[in-house]
Length: 315
Length: 308
Picture 1 (cartoon, chains in turn red, green):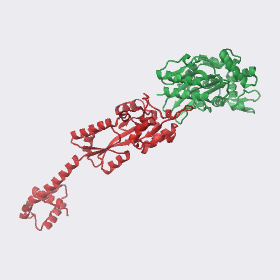
Picture 2 (picture 1 turned 30 degrees about the vertical axis):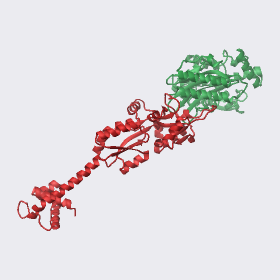
Picture 3 (picture 1 turned 135 degrees about the vertical axis):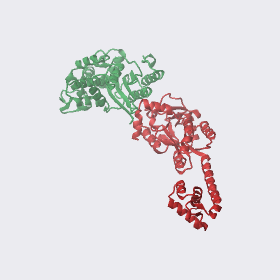
Picture 4 (picture 1 turned 180 degrees about the vertical axis):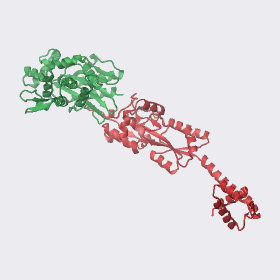
C-alpha cells in the first residue's frame, strides 16, 4: 500500500473534520478517501475516527498519531523540495560546435554565474550534440539546421593564406584554369560541415560546379587544417571569426545554401519556463560566439529572395 | 599592337587589371583584337579597343537571325514557311545544309536554328535571300545598332577569297595576314569598308538589349536566346566556363585569320555577362587551339571579375 497517500488522507480528514471536505482538498472521490482511511485503520490496528456522531471526531489513537503523520509528510515534502532545488541549480551542460570563440564562450559562462545558472560548455560534433540532447546529458545544444530556415545564420567561407577577395567566392571559380600551369589547392572541410545534410549539399554543389570530388578532403584535426592552409596548400571551409583568429584571409561562399544554420534546442527534461528564462540571455551570447550575422541576413532575405535558396531546396 | 598601346574602357581597378591581363595573354599566343565584357544587369564592364569595326564572319548570323525573328514576331513572315535549298546553288560550308548533297526543305524557324547552332552558311544565305541583305542593314539602323553593318551574304566571303587565292587556303590566309599588316585589303570581305562589320561595343550592346528584351519583340528575343544556348561549338568562349551551374549562349565567327565569338554567360546564381571577343592572328594556322583557349580564359576571367 502507498503509505504516504493514506497518511495524507488521514491528516486531511483530521484537519477538515469532514470526509467530503477532505476529499475536495485532496482532489479524490469520497469513496476512495473513505477506503484509504479504512485500509490505514487496518494497517495500524485501530480506528482513527469516531463516525458514530454527526460531526466526525478523532479517536484517542487518531489524536496520538496525528503529529507523527504530519511529521512524516513534512519530511517527504522537504525531500522533494531538496530534489527540485538540486535539479534547478545543477550545472547546465551546453553542447556547442567545435572551434568556437573562447572569449565569447567565457562571456556565456560568466553570464550563467550572474543568473545563478552554472553553465558547463562542451565542444561536441554535430551528431553528438543531438544525441546528448535526446539522452539528457545536455541541457542545451546548438543543432545544425538548413540555413534558410535557421534562427542563427553563420556565413561559411573559404580561408586561405592569400588575400581577402573582398567579394563572395563562387565554387565554379575554384576550377583549374585550362592552359595555365600551377596546382589548385584542395578544399578542407571540418567535421562541423562534413556530416548529414550539410555534407550532402556541399558534395552536390562541388560536383555541379565542376570540381573534382577528390579535391575535397575531411580535415582530421583543426590544427593541421589551419597549418595546411597557412602553408598555402589548401583552402579551409570555415566561418569568418575562426579564420581571423588564425590570421587567415577569408571570403564568404556565394552559395548561401551552403552556409551554417543553427537552432538553440533545450532538453525535454528541462522545465519549459525555466528553459525559456535561460534562453533569453543565453541565445544572444551564443549567436555572438558562433559569429552569426542574424540581423543582416534576415534583412537581406526580406529584401530579395535569393535564387540560390531554390537550388538548396532541390538538394 | 602592344597591350600598353590599347585603349581600355573605363572600369574599376580590378577590371582594368583583368583587361590588361587578357590583352597580354592574347599577344603571347599571337593574336590581337578587341574585347568587351559587360554585366547585363549592373552595366559594369571591362575591355579594350571596343569601337573598331571588325569583319564579323559568322557572328553576322546573330543580327540576321534577330531581324528574321523580328519579321516573324511582326507577322510579316511565317516561321513554318518551307524553303528548299538545292545543292547546286547553295552556299559552301562544312556543317548543316551546306554539307548536304541532296535537295532539302526546311522551315524558316529551322534555318535560324541551323545557322546559329552549327553556323550553317547555306541556311543563313537562304534567310538573307528571303529578307534581303539591305533590309537587314536598314532594320539594324532603325533599331539604333549603329556599330553593326550588314553588306553581303555568307557565300561572298568565300567567293572573294577564292577570287584572289583560288582554292589555296594557305595562300588566302597568308594574303589576309599580309594585308592586315599593310593596311590594304585584297580580299574585299576583310575590308571594313565593304564587309559585314561590327565593333565589340556594338555587339555587346546588342546582346544586352536581347537579354533585357529591349529590342524587337519579346517573342523574338526569347527565341534568339533559346537558339544561341544550343550552339554546339564550345572551343572558345565557353572552353573554360562550362559547368552544370554556368551556361554560355554564343555564336562563333571564323574566317581565315579571324577568330571571334560573342555570347552571354549565365550562372545559376543569376549573374549574366555579355561578351564580345574579336581576334585576328598573324599566325599561319587554320586551327590555333591556344588562341581559342585564350579567348576562353579571357571570358572566364572577365565573368568572374564582373559577376557579383
